Image (tube, rainbow, N blue to C red; front, top):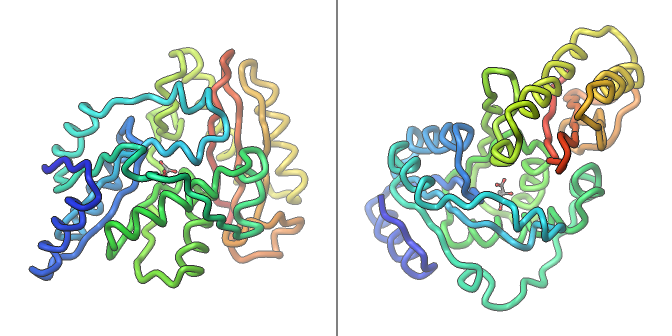
Length: 280
Ligand code: PAF
C-alpha cells in the first residue's frame, strides 16, 4: 500500500490508474480506524480496481476545539489496518496541504444540514462539505463509501453531490456494531469499560421502540424516557424524521422512509454518541 501526503502525487498516481481503465473507490476517514471503517474499505476493494482511503482529521468540521484535541490519532495502526484490508492508497495530507488558505466556501442544504447535528454543532456540516468536496475533486472517485452510522452526514453529502452536479455514486454502508449492540465509533475508545456497557442500552432501547404500535410522539417519549432513566446516559436529542429530507414527522404516514436519530451523552467527561434506527 502506498502512503501519499501530497495532492499532486495523489492526482498523478490516480491519473496513471485511470489511463489503464481502472475504477477508483474513495473511503473518506478521519483516522482512528476500527472495524466499521474496515467494512467500508473491504467493500470498496471488492467493487473497485483501486481504493483510496483518506486519513485527515478535518479541523473545519469541529465546532468544539476540545473535541478536536481529544480525537484519537493513530496513523501507524490505521495504515496497518488499511494494508490488511487491501487498500492500494492511504492519503494522509497535512492541514496546510488541504487548507493553504482558510476555506471560505459556504454550503447550505436545509433542512438536512440545519436540524439535529446541524443545530447542535453549528458549522459542522459546512466543514464536512468543505473537506468532502475537496477530496472528491482530488480523487474523482467512481464511488465513495460512507458509514450509515452518520446517517445525517450521508443525507447532506447526497444533497451536495446533487448541487455540484458531481458524477459519482454515494454508497451507504450499514452500521457495524460491537457485540453489545453499541455502534462502532472512534469515540468509543474514550469510554471506560463500564461506560461502554451502559452505552449499549442506546441501541437496545431504539430496537425495542421499533416494536411499539404507537404514535410518533409516544415512540419518541418512550425512547427519551427509557434512556434518560439509565444512570450515565442523557439524551441530547431524539428526532423522528423523514429519512431523506430529515424534516420532523408527526405521523408515520407522512413519509415513505422514517428514521429516528439520537445523540446521547455518556459518562462523566461526557462523550457524545450518535446512533439511529430505521422505522420504515
Ligand atoms: O465521517 C467522517 O469521518 C468525516 O466526517 C469525514 C466524512 C471523513 C469528513 O471529514
